[in-house]
Image (cartoon, rainbow, N blue to C red; front, side, top):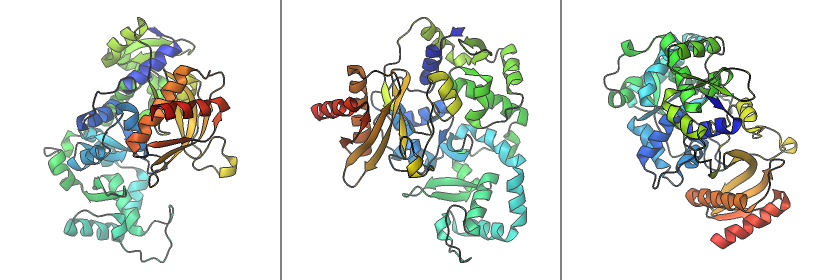
Length: 406
């Protein structure tokens, strides 16, 4: 199979569930979307919607954000480190349990060096049940902050990394609520024993296969970033999987290296290569969406150079604080800096920047105004205000389109 860049982009978008919306999203659709991606990255920045909820909106349209919270509390999802901190389908727990059992050197070292903190936290959870970090009183006299966590917070996080504690739910402020692993698993995976955990080699193969499936089509360089697995040996592993018939060989025009497709996506590939329907949706993406979280892949496939400027000083930002990529008809055509003013019910678009050589036409204006309206209504901030755009005529055209549809 030989793919153009355009066809490879379409493979990625369809594999990620970005090309078709359910007629009326359900909680099961939320779980299905997470399963399709494999992982849903967690980030707490809430200048628009928090990232995991926004990623789901891009794929489902209007849905109830509480469904994601409920799926975690019900044990259909669990939290752990993957691409980053992520929500993960509970059926994949065994893969990550292998990492917990083998242990990270830094995690093991901290736990062994802080027995008192570990004992104090574990006794608190065993005796009194689930706990949040804020429930431990600070006693070391420090002010707090990202790198001045209290000892109990460090203990909670290292026990979470080691798998002794799990996240049983998130509180209304999105804070983690920790509980004993056995209490979380007793209803989520009641028959689990660590004897079921796969071997490291099985984990390595599973992650490679799942990355190929989730990305639609891959070259070896794109595989390690998806689940943050080692880069060494990945090209040879994909070659072995192809020889065994576990994945299919392909090519992407312009990339001088083998490409691969998962058999689950074979029919999708045939349809795309035979000239099937071209991408038609317009939507906004989170900065932590799988489509753009690998910045190199986004540049190679879409010609889209992207970085998040949240941690860049304001004077040095090029595009804005929390910039959302704009997906339009299979291309990343621009980005917008947005802020949701929840109390005022206003969705503010501070700036929109189209990519060079992207024409401003009726299709783009219609698609983008529809996406803005949809996101704003879902978010509970139905009034959309567009401040600035490049080119300038786009802002005026969007205001007109939004006023006409209101």
